[in-house]
Length: 591
View 1 (cartoon, rainbow, N blue to C red):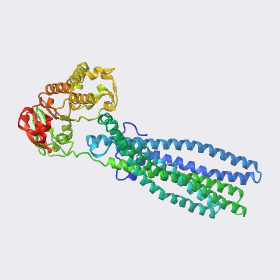
View 2 (cartoon, rainbow, N blue to C red):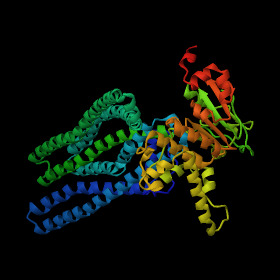
View 3 (cartoon, one colour):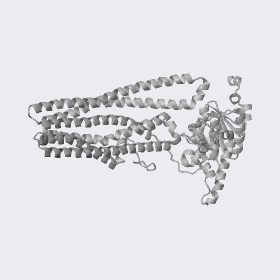
View 4 (cartoon, rainbow, N blue to C red):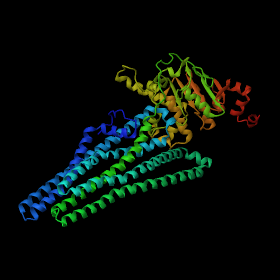
């Protein structure tokens, strides 16, 4: 089974079927062992009726107790050996399924890490969760075909050969009848794929909505929209349930025919064999063996139908995984280094120029316009933006990530202690606090730890978040839920800001860092942010006069373009639109 730290390999993402085959090819010896155990196990099941017929014809009917004991002993030995084979088959196939499960999890998680911040722009969270929760398990289950599935084919051929020695007529009926049964179930499997695909798509949408509801429940309650959203969620849930009923209807028919048709076929073949025995064409022992052979064939046929069902579902899920694996992050073709000294960022699309070492604000009539500019300046979206006169896409992406940090006010907060949550950025700036100088000896480690603790306390102070730590039962060691749901919106915002400040990037781009704070706390954060980031480049998007009054430069944006630039007070005096926006002057806005 794949090790937790082992490279899962490069998946074949050309199609769902090729991905399933890749999972088999990554563990060939284990799959071969499963096929061998499954084949021998099923063949010996078919050998049981033969041994029984010999015990009847050679021992019981002529009264030869020695022959009866011999064949009975052989029957017991084969049964005991087959029990051991069954255990080994199940154990091996469990390992095959677990390997496929863990391998798929690793490639999906690896792809999510590879996409990074680009992932939310390409695929919804609900669909990713659905892959991790449901599709992975279904894919691994579909690999059952490599064990019992192969064994079913071998057992079918073995029984056909044994039946030829009894009656060519019965062998012909069995050889032709079993494929007919499988073909009858085939159309249902195609219909199942369509229903299952639609069900999985609806499930992904509903999962995404659950996540949105969990994250915005307080806001919805405050706006009085909880009932409206709950009604929409109820309708989506009902549609998903109805689609689940459709999948269940097809599944029930597949499973019913998988058991019912072989049983009916068993009755027909037994009736034919009984007529042949009554006519004297076959012996009583052969009649018993025919019944046993066909009874044994019920298992392989049921396995075929079950494998077809599992493969059909596995293909649906594998296609979703392949579609995810085909996603590509923003191409990184840059080869140049970052500017060696603090330099200006420039976005030609909007006209925003961010001078080094200054606190700059972006004020937009539509907040999404300002956020889009920061995305371009941080190279999270394609653009012609430059840094020190060098196009951002000409600079190696790791260099940009090392120096430029985009802090979104809705960025994820990971479960763990509060201290781990704040340290989770772990960027270059954070490493400067956390790691001792290269070549330092162990006696320097306490000093480095002290420096890091000081930096953490400074970040908390700048974000006015000391009261959060003091209110928690274990301070920084208090365990926090994912997204810090046990904190208020304003507290979460301050924790996000402290995390960004602790990373200490050369250029910090922040989206609405104080939007959820009260006026007093907002003014405190604005003063401390200006002081803490003195001499380093910082950009904030905001319409708060308390923050704007502490900035060096303000860019006023209209339709995503710079309409005016200057200090906060200059723009208040010279730009009516800006004054109306930041001063909440409705009359001026009307004019």
